[in-house]
Image 1: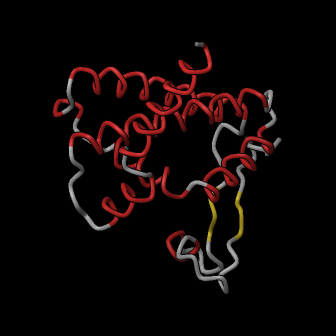
Image 2 (image 1 turned 45 degrees about the horizontal axis):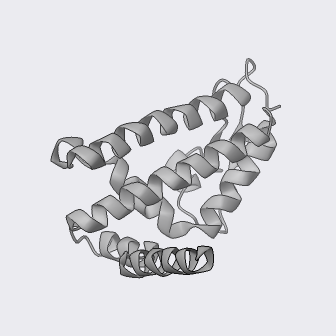
Length: 161
């Protein structure tokens, strides 16, 4: 009897996840400038909440080591580009348009984002170094041109750990 119950539960879980839109599909829709359906927004909120929870747990495991935190965040972002797109959309959404259940997820997500931000900033320098282009143009340094090698300028009161 237990085997049948487990099998039935596995089938239900599979059916539910098969019907849910994937992170890739939601990110494609966001990148195309399309509005998310209520079902897609619920999924986007859930994905974002799960992602930020994983990030917070991983940052806590870094035990205040700022370099490890930054390395983890870079790797996570590279491995999960769709989640980053989705999270940015969720964070810029108008919470007053959400259902009551989605609003609770949104509120929890915002608290977890605040925790994530505090964890990283408390472990790192008070002001992160600003990349400056050779010409002194900050925008040029962030253009993504591989030929542009930005300099990192640190103030006297700030030093990297």
